[in-house]
Length: 164
Image (cartoon, rainbow, N blue to C red; front, side):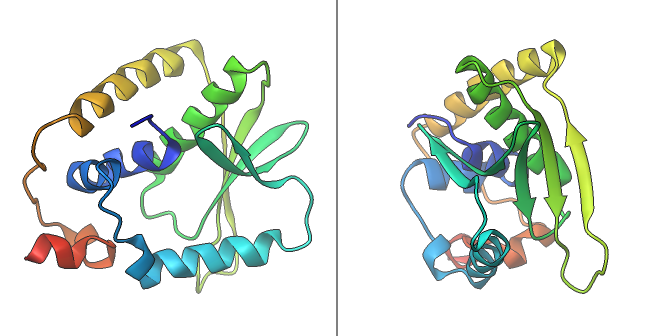
């Protein structure tokens, strides 16, 4: 499987989730949390230009002359979101499109949106190469990684699967 932004994000969130998704066990269609995120994206992008742009194996939420914007409903896993956006910036850079990244967190029950600006540096590119290699090794393992229960598990679309 070709690495994509979702796998990058899942790798930071949970190695087991990353492996399961990469190996075509999709539980997201049954997840209320995933459904809420999709609805938020649709509402935020409704009638707007340059939103939900798909290029090869990535789908960026919005692209302008200055930024590639990734929208998240929560800032619960900022590191995962940052690396996902860095991956998008690298894929676009390889195609001759150089932009900065903008992460926008649209927290429910909070009035202010949180926005972070992300830049793809040479150092981050090298780290990203290592990360893609680690993810490739992980998803090619013969068996699913062990279940490591954490607070994050309760909102995960794979929660029921892992409990069996």
